Amino acid sequence: RTLPPLLKYVLNEAVRLVGAERGYIVTLNNDGSLNLRYRQEQPNQDSSPEEDQVSRTVINEVVKTGQPLIIRDAQSDSRFSEAESVIILGLRSIMCVPLITRGEVIGALYVENRSIRGRFGSASLTPLILLANQAAVAIENAALIEDLEEKVAHRTRELERAKLQVEQSWAESVEANRMRTVWLSKITHDL
Image (cartoon, rainbow, N blue to C red; front, top):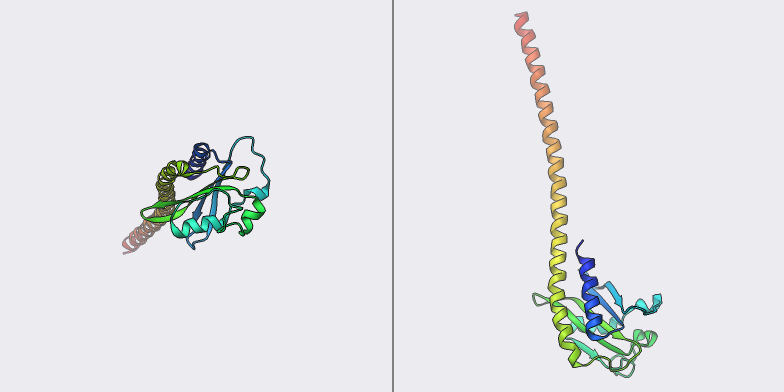
């Protein structure tokens, strides 16, 4: 599969590009719910299972509006300071950009820094948006390739079944023809 290595590469680049502690790629399921697809953190970063969580409030805002979001200090930002994830995870600097392809939001690229306030600024936003735009197209292409491969595999199985049925029908026809020939031969002999 091509998608997991792609997601890993995109997040490695995003974390490195903006100096984030952690990064996440979240995609939208068909029902509109969020699907945490991949997580990346800087080397030597200790994390607990609790830290494998993101602020769904921030991601939902970005996915809903289709606009990037920079939060210099989530704990003092009036829009997000009351969000349970911000409080529990001790979130500080957050930057989240939508993954948009063909005018449709398919997810979000989310990076954070829990130890430094004001880590991300507008200078970090432009390169992250460019990376997210390229990633969205690549993610969509990888998903299309995987879908196509799945369809080809399914069609191949259908063709194999049809081939077996044709071969079986052919064998039955040959046997019926042989039996008819034997029967006609006996009738002819008797006559």
